[in-house]
Length: 101
View 1 (tube, rainbow, N blue to C red):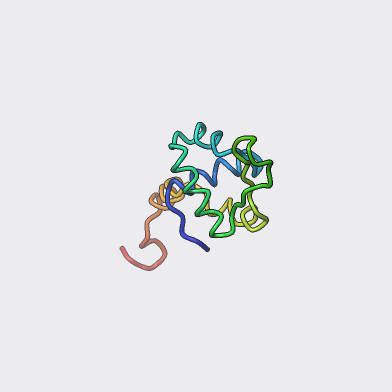
View 2 (spheres, rainbow, N blue to C red; view 1 turned 90 degrees about the vertical axis):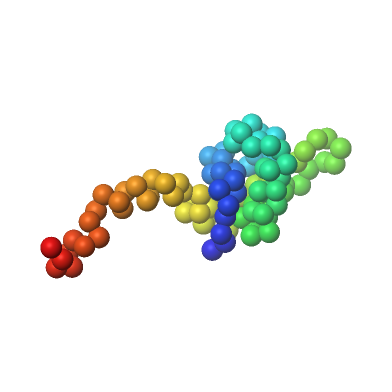
């Protein structure tokens, strides 16, 4: 599985929430990232086979991006919020069940 930077996860999470397809400008507005950062994140997702540009007519503005089948399969596990999963495990005692006092 590829390692994703926080901004890549954010873009992936918003692509997933929009049924896998969105324009870069829409993603920039939704995420609060600059358009250049969104395009860099989409490029990284493209190189890791998670997203790909959709065919569009040149000269009619920017083209939409879509999740690949691989991105739809592994995207939800890659984009999940690590802070919530870390907070859940801190409540349990790591020594519990191992015979420590």
